[in-house]
Length: 515
Ligand SMILES: *[C@@H]1O[C@H](CO)[C@@H](O)[C@H](O)[C@H]1NC(C)=O
Ligand SMILES: *[C@@H]1O[C@H](CO)[C@@H](O)[C@H](O)[C@H]1NC(C)=O
Ligand SMILES: *[C@@H]1O[C@H](CO)[C@@H](O)[C@H](O)[C@H]1NC(C)=O
Ligand SMILES: *[C@@H]1O[C@H](CO)[C@@H](O)[C@H](O)[C@H]1NC(C)=O
Ligand SMILES: *[C@@H]1O[C@H](CO)[C@@H](O)[C@H](O)[C@H]1NC(C)=O
Image 1 (cartoon, rainbow, N blue to C red):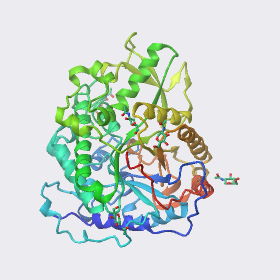
Image 2: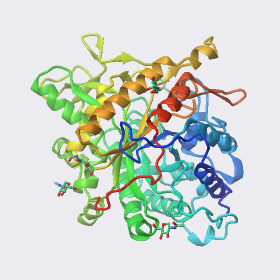
Image 3: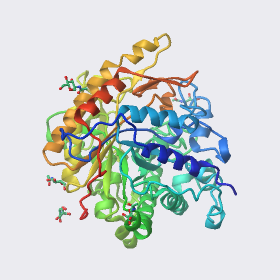
């Protein structure tokens, strides 16, 4: 079996990041803590392209995006930003921006195209023995690596029904092990999963992400069971995380000196009306969407709010699993974009929505027809800057001031036919968005939250899942015919912001060793 040339690619990418460009400014204190990471984020399927190159097998997203009707615009990530070939150009963009970190994810279908659990098969691979020549240099751009950002080998879907099966736990641990072993001398920050709460909800409850499973009234799928499968998928993902972390702690962490966590989609919820029922509903909404994937790593079980309502529908952790779950992360990755209202459906039933499996909560972006914040081109993303501060404070309180990174925050422009490129380049709204969210984050930090980084989603315009290329999140505009990258106004702003506050860190993150 071949493991493709992907590991050498990743190693070259990491080496490129460690190159110290000459545009980096020196530290002069500033509004964020010393060693704070400022970066941009990306993911393999949304950026890499090179769908079948160097032995990569098809991923679930390759299959899903090619099925007519799944992606509104009919587009797919076959080429995307072609970062697989243009990564050196992108590293140069990052050095010129002056960021000190880059968050990206690893394509599982490139690392293990055929998914065979036999370590003897990949040890021989040529190129894998590339050694880093520059030791533990912490200058340059610190990599922040997500092991799994939605895309999994389709083979696993076909063989096991992916996250429906507990077999996935061993598959994930094996994949993670390769990454720790081969890249851990350079990568000190790992997130196991990106937004597993979105994977479970969109993949198995609404059926709008692969594997596209659901049942009525939650979605329109040919197969699935929305009342059971999201919780089974979540359970297997949570245990996959816990086992990979356990393995990392046991065999790699002390040797490599890294840290590991998970990145959740952190929607903040506020009561629709200032009454107790809706306040409780907002708390339930947070538990059912955010704490669902975090409580287990602190308490060894799902949120009590979920247990109370879901009862036997929620899978059980054995006492041994429970033990492994606790201390299951070093940091929380916070992907924050929006705030929604929560309306109670427990004390007074709602006409539609707010089902038991949703915690008897209906979420909405409007109160009496007035949106909670300015609308954006993503229907559930409203601009509510103080949501950042509230979200961070919720996590500080619920998780005893655990270390956090804002692993995503960003603004999407709509790319309408007929829009001129220059309109998209003058993205003043994006700059306002980041300024106000950063100010909100700064307030949370000033009040004691232990936040150590902020990643703009995203470096480049890229393949925005169901929206294809019609939503543009990049600091750089990508012309998808030529793949040319052009800085938007926001790229210029970020560069100046970083130079002003001068975030270059000599020592990377100063971790409190007791954490
Ligand atoms: C790199 O880090 C490891 C573990 O922290 C340490 O043992 C080793 O000496 C370091 N190497 C260099 C070149 O600094
Ligand atoms: C459900 O999906 C089927 C097949 O894709 C389609 O024909 C039908 O119109 C859809 N129904 C609704 C209510 O969207
Ligand atoms: C919270 O964190 C502090 C400091 O890290 C620790 O001393 C304390 O025991 C923790 N409390 C809980 C309930 O975990
Ligand atoms: C949270 O932890 C950080 C870093 O350890 C510390 O500086 C801060 O005072 C703590 N905040 C609270 C609210 O305990
Ligand atoms: C950089 O600092 C200058 C001088 O304090 C200020 O006028 C400018 O607005 C700052 N730029 C950014 C992007 O923060």
